[in-house]
Length: 390
Image (cartoon, rainbow, N blue to C red; front, side, top):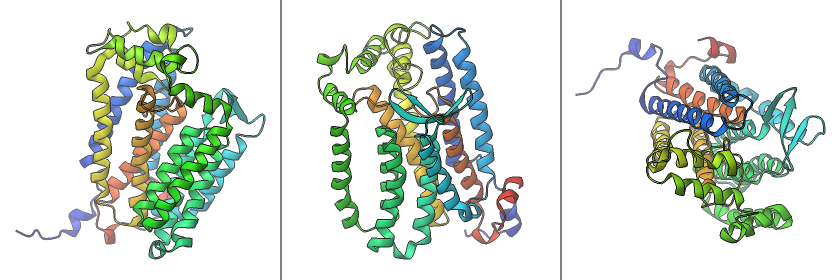
């Protein structure tokens, strides 16, 4: 039986916490809680106080929750007026990381901006800025996406600008993630296959040349091909990560009983925290983490089916890809599938910058979940600040 449309019920404020996005939020919260437990275990032995890093992470979680609420109240369509300002600020921040006194150099890379005791990894936020700008451009030129210049060349230049600046820091992992997300958004916008397929060898070839010209990256890649032979040098971290999984086995050695993070595994609380989970909690929990990320991705795709226009479709697609692909890269590195590369595990690894980005991404999902439930002609046309106060 056909239901009659009721304008009064449709005009009522829609809830952001329902449907696939509600399950995504629950999954994200579960991952955050797991991260706090693993972080306490991984850092209790080498901190001045056993709660130091956990307290920092809890503060970061609270800040990320605030950012999530803030983003969930924005009027995304109104924000498109400021898209090029957002792009300009993002590019400027990437450039500033190369300025002595502002950019903070760690392990040979300038990825951070320092403000007193605070330190932020700029590329975490510019990834979302790139997605926003690219989604706006492709939606604005939707009728011309099959053309080479407007449909392919200009979008590639947008992605290349952000990815190239990140590559110069240098941060090959984040650059690869940025380029991959941008390329997939261009594909989803229905750009011609011939342009996309023709550009893949060029992109891979260019990245390969840059790796070969960087002695450190080339040595790391060669060491990855001989894990056992380089376990005391180039693959030391990966070798001990795999040892942690082996020791943990099926059931794990117990929370707080792991030894790899205390004595052998560098960056156990950030990039390699998944190895800590594997050693202490065992195969079941590590598989559960993988399943949760897979479910988040699939539910994100289900949420996409309700997108009202190309801009919001691409924005949410980019949001989902930023979470899913970052998780894939981290899990691939920690388990030895991919060469060692520093990248946080979403929601779990220690680090304020990545937590804030995750808060923004979940905020985008909440935002669209609320607004996509209303018929288009009932969605109010509001200013940016009005949308936040609604």
